[in-house]
Length: 312
Image (tube, rainbow, N blue to C red; front, side):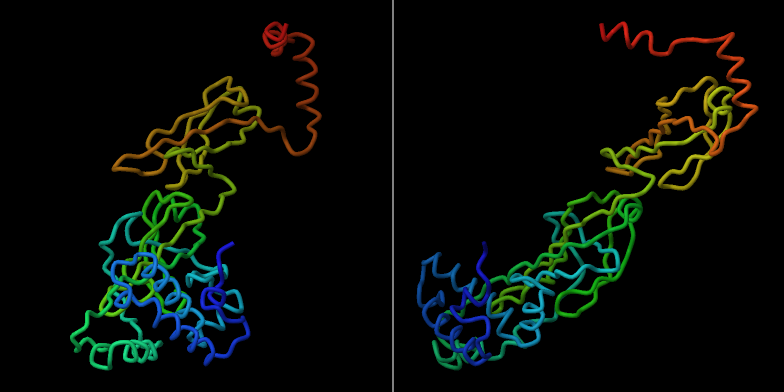
């Protein structure tokens, strides 16, 4: 299991804020990259303890972590009653949002660096090289309605630190897709840029539609007379209802294809496939029973004959 921020800093979960601050200062003095030039392991460890301190070194953020509202990376754990969105797919860094948060909540980081290198160096004016590093990424899991993922949508998202962002779910978003909000992760070190917020979409299932790649599949109930005589029926699609002709003599399981009524992807649309299902009236109908009894006597056929022959 991943270590908790307390374990990374070497303090107990009930440690005071002062003890946490002292533990971080001690580690930072030992691990700072300026004191360990070329030591990648020390630099990685420095980033790890700094991120841990950013979580539990701030009383408000520590409280949210202890209550289980965010995890050790700053990711939201509470379910959200809204949809969540995007600034480009994985690997895209051209999102227009800009983060204004830096180290203002961690003023004593400057004090640590002052002790290490002198006050001028800690504020960028000394002769020593100042350590700069990009801030860590934070991850969120956001639930999205099926139709919003298929058609695209906009919504407002509340980040772990309380900021709100207007974001976009792209058309055709898939379950498990990760969206990147550039600059909305953990603050950077020194003059380093902030990290990104990585949002994993969890698409809720729909009671009618099922996605199959870029195609949509629907099961459509039809009446006995529609199956025998055919006719126009209304069929739901992700773009709205459309009129479809059911061919005469259609059995349950017959599949109709609605071209271009699926999910849009790469400038094209998938299709919708409609599987017919013959449904009897909700209550017994004496006239239908009498008609079918007469039919059975004069028109009987065996739809299972081929099946039994193949089964051997």
